[in-house]
Length: 373
Ligand code: ADP
Image (cartoon, rainbow, N blue to C red; front, side):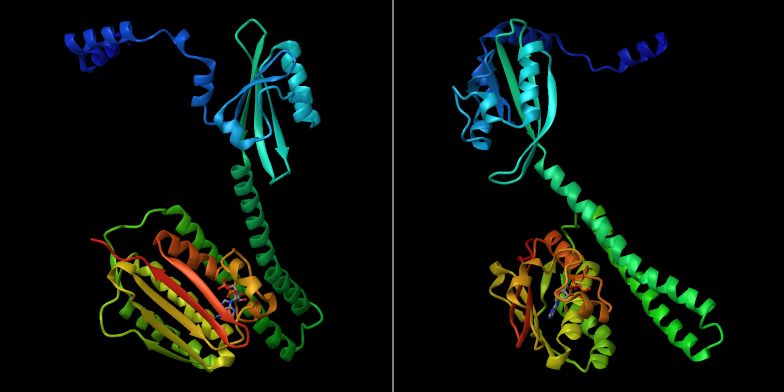
């Protein structure tokens, strides 16, 4: 150990005499800590903070508190303002025992908010107390979203799994010697397993996107060959759906900053949806609008299908959101395609906008920012 200390000491950076003298001077000139006022200290705290007295009456609130609890000001009685039993109990205990305490507290009005609140005495005199509110609303929201997501994903997997399990049972029992039923059931089981595989692929895509938050800022992609490639790949689906895909992409390169593989996924999803949900329109059109170099590039995918009622449009990119669950399932949809699209576009600083006239079709437009550099 002694040798290690010597080695460390030998490699420790030596401060020069001048540096040490400057540090001593700074220390000597620094005003004493006692010259800082309680107000200045409270103002430097970014969470809502209240100072109160032995009666539970507010004697100071910091700026963050004035924003978070506008009704709380000097003279307010804390036990009257916070009527929830857990707050009453904490204030009473803090005043009686002078012990630091913390609790979880939530307010429903005007919006639902969750706080971790702590109260503790200031100094030894027992005259002043401080209460700090740590806003936990965002963490709670993310936790709830995660729990909902897991519940949705499990439910989506459980449905086809239950169907496969049911058919296996039937095949081993009542349909054991029925070749026609066996063929039909095997066909359904295959469809269900394909559905599960698609769902898992989409879930993996989402989690992979979440794991690699940054894009290579230097990567450039020409959207023209990229979209043409996607159109070629989707030709069999389009033919099967009785849909013609037409593109007007101009002749100039359409260069944007971004990841080729991810942008392929974006246009695959949009074109596939247009073919699947807009098949009744028979025609899907891809067009480009280049509104000047400084405004970036817009790419639109338009179909002439049934369109989307207005109230659904803001929710389309939510995970597992579908306008009609049965139609989506019938089209082998997972409800994750547009969530993946939105995720990828956000990483590209691009945006998706959707417009639709029910009965006349839908237009999904991707707005790319200009590729700088
Ligand atoms: P899915 O796997 O169900 O296709 P998406 O996230 O790709 O999931 O799409 C979500 C929902 O948006 C679909 O279930 C469908 O109801 C609706 N939708 C997407 N594109 C279109 C479109 N072109 N026309 C009508 N509805 C669409």
